[in-house]
Length: 222
Image 1 (cartoon, rainbow, N blue to C red):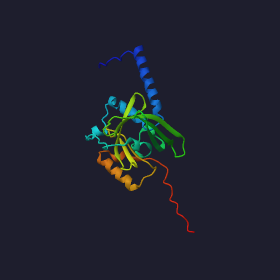
Image 2: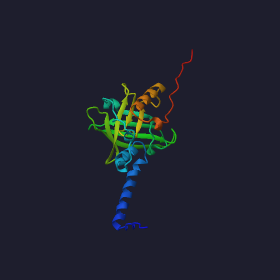
Image 3: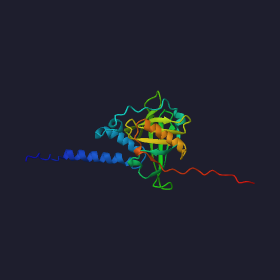
């Protein structure tokens, strides 16, 4: 039986492989610090893998965002309530994201979590976001290490900005965020229902461990 002979390994090809390996290791370093950084790499490299996205695989229509976002009101700290887990966030609890609008219109991003327990060691990563749809401010992209940027689409938002849902056009990534570590179960159920209506499969949705709500203090009778 005829078999093709292996290609010779030239010094040039060895250098190329070494260069690619070094580049991937360098790019992976910030990912180990967690949070949305993993999405940036996945989104940037997804087209090269040939893997169909959830949107493509299920034949879903284009993901719709909210009509408008007031970035000044959106700024501040958000608590992660639930997410589609990604490897970069493995072991993260008490996840928060803080957004600060810059004078140049871009947004500073600071993500933080506690590893393995709410009193565990802190892990954090800083990045930058910029608006890609100025008509709505609902489509942004985020970068934690240049030159890679990943889509950050706001697909649900409370009228009082008490909760938000961040998605990706692929429907492979999802975050439910709130201004407090806990939200009422009826509020969460309503959010999940709307997410499902947008075509997101719910089997991957996992609640994030956050500090419990503070007990209500009952005044004693005098």
